[in-house]
Length: 147
Image 1 (cartoon, rainbow, N blue to C red):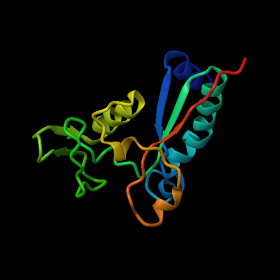
Image 2: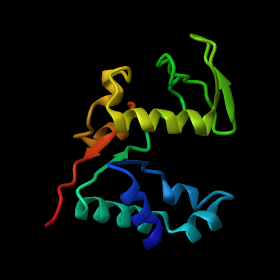
Image 3: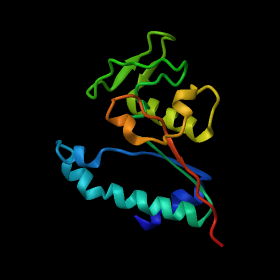
Image 4: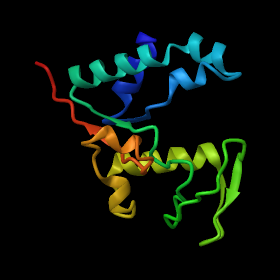
């Protein structure tokens, strides 16, 4: 995990990850894979190495609709279920692979692209939004170089 996290930090100025619900995944059929992967530990490696090497680390809240947002037009698919691997945007007609679409939206967050709607670009300052089931926004953690 050290070599992989170092390679990611070396090759990127900005690293964007999703804050997945590890405890929730441990209750699913993915439990062994998630437990074996040490996702939380890996994220910690990325965070401290980003800080050490002066990179930007952005951890997007697990409720950010990365899979549900059409990366082309910004339409939000409220009906997308976890088992839906592909979907077609009714607004622009773009067909999305769920994971590819999410990765493009996370890429846009990392770029700070103006096409991403302001509600999706805002920083999370109050995590109590989760309790009210409002859509949360990405949380940006700027890391400074140590020297």
